[in-house]
Length: 130
Image (tube, rainbow, N blue to C red; front, side):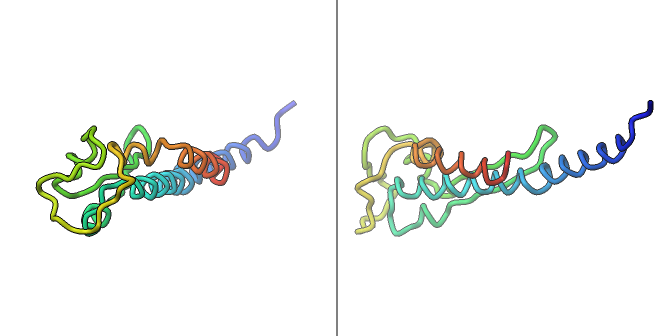
């Protein structure tokens, strides 16, 4: 006995996969980048907001999938990210009142790894059904 509706099922599955790859995945990645970036800002060494205002996020499609990239575009961002000392003031920074005493090294990475971020990312997975 022939199977009826198999072609319709294939078409519907194609639409579902296209919807996930074209819409849901980039939205989910954008949400994850926003969560991580916002939490990393709370741990950054603030000096007149130059670092925070230089935050950037990009989503790119590649052959292997969709990639999200978050970065800070200032000369001293690498120094701050990799410095193990708590609350350093790099020599290139201006002397000003806008300094965050809660700053932590590796703030950008921590923005994606702290418990609150992980919980929000799990919620985003449920929302986007990824």
